[in-house]
Image 1: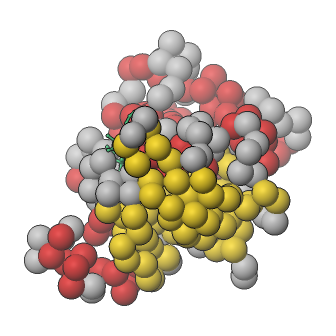
Image 2: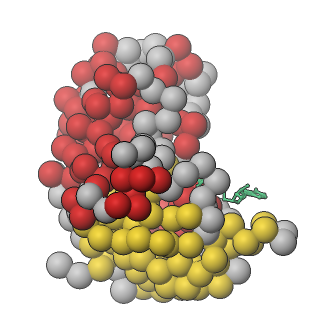
Length: 237
Ligand code: ATP
């Protein structure tokens, strides 16, 4: 299987701050690829650049053979890049059901939408119990589940996840990673940005480590879990 998404020479600047300094990486169809690094390393900026939400100073993004470098973000979403934002931005004054329906707003395949809705509720039984409650009343973990569920409702070709484990209790983190793995087992290509280096490397096929805007290591998740630099800098061993 070839690269579904290929990024080369990506640079992003904020004023005189070089947040991302010319990075290369690719996502293979059907795999989980992770970008791990510390707070402020440039992970979120990289994701926002892929989605067209921040300006790229240089570089190229090719998705499914199409150059999407200069496309506006709504076009990129329609091509099938679906981002789950950090902080789980969602419509707190809408119900869980309405949030999930919104995920599919651009789709017209009604039957498939209904089956995806049922499938999301199978993946996240907690959401089924709270379908008609306001999203704003969910716990942090449930909100993360809803954010993922909503992105899945778009039937993306690639799911982009920005620190899904952030701020969640360890048991909930396990649950979120289990579901990410399950979505991938069903064939979904996933790009996972994480500070939780151990958990991310455990489920990732391919992994990149970013430090101050540069990729400093790459390999399979398994290789990087054993890498001395990862062990020392990120796993405290
Ligand atoms: P986090 O875990 O905090 O999300 P990160 O690895 O995603 O960290 P980024 O948020 O991508 O890091 O930030 C990379 C660098 O760019 C940091 O130095 C940050 O301060 C800077 N930065 C990010 N967003 C902006 C912005 N809107 N304006 C100015 N500087 C920014």
